[in-house]
Figure (cartoon, helix red, strand yellow):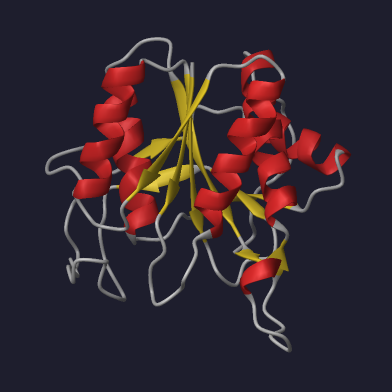
Length: 213
């Protein structure tokens, strides 16, 4: 079983491309014979992590891939590390705005993704999709979910998980807006590539994908 998650709209947007891409990626993977469940998470601290943990308990997946929007980025961002910090620049969808709080009180400072992100990066590039390994998932609800996911999986054997940020959808930007974007179909194809790579890859590739700053 594969569990895919995306987010509801936030910040005044009418759509969240992460959820649209997750739904379409689920369709693509099901057409290949995979068992996939897509779940929409609320853009709310606490509630999002709780719903994700409940979904893991209910569906008992072998792969969990969560996605979220990173407006302003131009490529699919394969997140390397989640940090134990909530520091919200804007309120979440219930008006919460935690500052310098731990995602899990007393938890480790950080967790690394257990997805083969380097191999996935290579395969995404082979498919002609813009992609990168990202060293930060921010400190908003996306990182909150990513950290909560990895904290949950740390006590569960055999489940691999991680997080991918997607750009704005080309379909959601008004005419004349020059912000970086990507069609939802391309995002969905990219998420499917990450899942396929995870299923097929036990040991990640050794490829340079770090950052100088």
